[in-house]
Image 1 (spheres, rainbow, N blue to C red):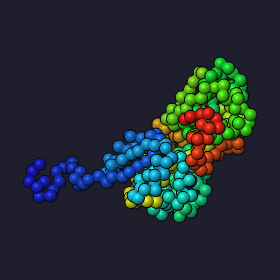
Image 2 (image 1 turned 180 degrees about the vertical axis):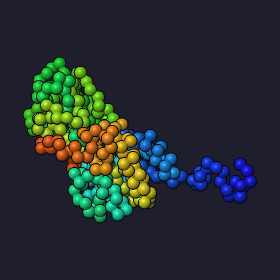
Image 3 (image 1 turned 30 degrees about the vertical axis):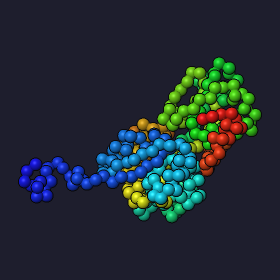
Image 4 (image 1 turned 135 degrees about the vertical axis):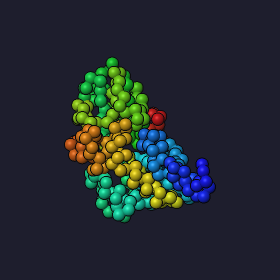
Amino acid sequence: MGVGFLHGVLPQGISRSYFVTPRKISVLTTDEVLFPMNLRQELEEELHVRFSVTVTRDWESMLANVVASPSADLIFLPSYWANTLAHQNLLANVAGIQGELLQRVSTDFVKSRNPETFTFLPIYWMKTGIDTPLDETFLDYLKNKKETFLFLLADEDLLLKHFQTWKDQGLLEQINTKRILTLQLDQLSKTSDEGAVETPLNREFRGGTHPFLSALLMWGAAIPANSTQKELALEILAVLTNVEHQEKGLLSTPFNSTFSTVTGKEIPLHRRADFIRDLQLKDTLILETKDQEAPLKLKNEFNFIL
């Protein structure tokens, strides 16, 4: 490497960060698609960090990692999970320096513009609908004995809401004639000739006119109050949510963006934040908090095991 290297002069093409141990940060995510491997690798290279990532949809496991001291440093999760953690004062502020992260989010997705109470950073949103192969109404689909499958999002709280709603509407007997299968978030583009599919609602399906069939969902990031690396977590979120990263990765996900800044010409209008204003939100399911007994209720009340 030459004499210069021995005297503290770095060889051409090697930065000082090459010799510095990467900062380690612990991450929890409920779904792989919220923090995929390719994004992790880009951020690791850009910020000289190393992520330790755990994917879990087990509420008790998530809660244990959040209340631990020290806790996980950064979590990606549904909004209603974050609301439940925030109600227990388990989350730190994520507004960013001078509220920069909060300012990136469209006003349609925040209840308050007060940076001091901002503990959940919305990144993605979706309105779901149930699409049928014949583009028929949901009630017609239920009557069609040739269509045997119903594919639903593998979210225990949303599943419980669906079953409770269908029970109230007197549809449970018809629902039980279908074989219900579940899909992960990254499978929501699936279509089936054999049944109906819960899918991102980027157009108004005829079936979507049935009351309380669609759901409005949000996912984003939070920082546990017990994290010892809050500044690093905020630094990561600042980079992850910049326009370049968001416009580069959005179309590889099933989501729409919550950021008013994501308006590049390659981003379709229906994937942008303000598209929510064009959708009918009356009679839409909205999950506010986590029902910790959802799996038990699904099993005991509806004989459904996720």
